[in-house]
Image (cartoon, rainbow, N blue to C red; front, side, top):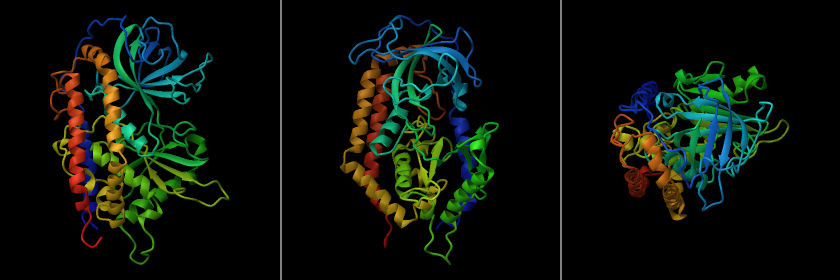
Length: 446
């Protein structure tokens, strides 16, 4: 057990907050939108959004319409084509925190019926839902990092937001390449939780929205927002129980009771999910993991029924927001392909001293390598990069970041093929480093 763990937690959180604020500030940004063609052909689906010229803001949602143009695979799409998918009302707002300062905005869409009520629909073959995210990837010149991380998570057997690359037209103006993604939320086609299920998010205190229900761990100051249930569906007693259980997990992790050695942090957390969450973020070196955009679920059994499996325990995941990973964080230690990121980090530093966790961690990596999961991620990346080749040229004509530093501390952005090659090279070197060094995490006697 590391005796300095608790003393350093507050400092770690402060350092993470400082790094996040500094490294996501663009040092150079386009000042005027170039004139872009409005009659082009694309292998990607097109999303045609109209708001009647109304400005889109961060709450409330601006009413508008969405028309989806997506012909059969192998065909191309034009902005003037007849819609082939959803064609109806939406509400749209700007989303994100730091990303709102960038010229290329991210959006949250809510599909609606003719009466303005939200309605679940299937967009581009994805399971039905009413809340959708358009990821801008402005800070990711490969346009691929989020999709790479989500594809890896699904290949590891976990739910992650399903995505489709698209091109967007807004009020007749070309907006570039976006990633249409499912919003992370509890629901039958999203995060499957029972009636007693809870969805939590770890987030910095200054990002907690007014009216959100949250709590803070007493030792580390970590803030958890209760994303679901909300409002009247969450009683004061239920909130107190969630807070106490989560605090007990953290306390047991750092302060195991020597009088009760049979009790461990594993009484509070699903080990397999925790191993996979840390392993994915360790492989990809995700700067935001356990600082922001970190989701945790807890699915309680229905009243009168016994708990089984992971029920009642904290389950880390789904993963989210991976644009500041894979060599794109602006921090030299994170962007290097060598080193263990979470050996000194919130919650996780103690885990690397735990033989049960470390043995499972190393075994899981070797299993992923033997089963071809990592190679499958490269296949996904190659497929998406080929599809994006021509649209990426339009995107970077609209948002000319080549030669500029978007995230402070990272190299100036290159041309799209170079960025894809650099991403693949980083992932290859990272996997090879982990192959060589992961067994050394197992200490003598374990």
